[in-house]
Length: 222
Image (cartoon, rainbow, N blue to C red):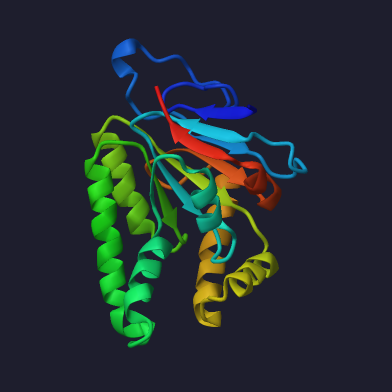
């Protein structure tokens, strides 16, 4: 299998080489953030991504860009996706109540599930819409506490494709909300392309739709 490894403290196979760390520092975060760009490869990109056993991964991008689809297909371990939480609540309540009424309960359940996953000490892949920087701050602190690193997996999909994705799934966000997401993701993408990662992130992997489509495995290991 064509696999990219992205360890918290080593270069692995596909990430730019990092200065070697003494053994006692093997769990420290990367000194220099690493950006791995897998875009514009016409689908000839890695089929797998592997991260350190104690690491955390945030998957971010526009609504409709394919974050949930990618996570369901490729994540072999723990994944926390707010869409999964909403789907569970919708099955019970959507026939009786509009979503706006029970949205606070969905959010509370989502973050409670995230907290439980983090307490497990295992590697976790977390869905992030790109507008909630405080979630990444929380994850970065937890990654440091457990001796791992926070990694960013950013889906770079144009707004038209993302809107098509929303229509395909039969669920979209308002024009105002989409504009907010679009601005936040664009700013994040520009920063990452310059090597300026969000505080606490040790690496970022950029993928377009073609690269996301060939990803078959996102996992964690020593």
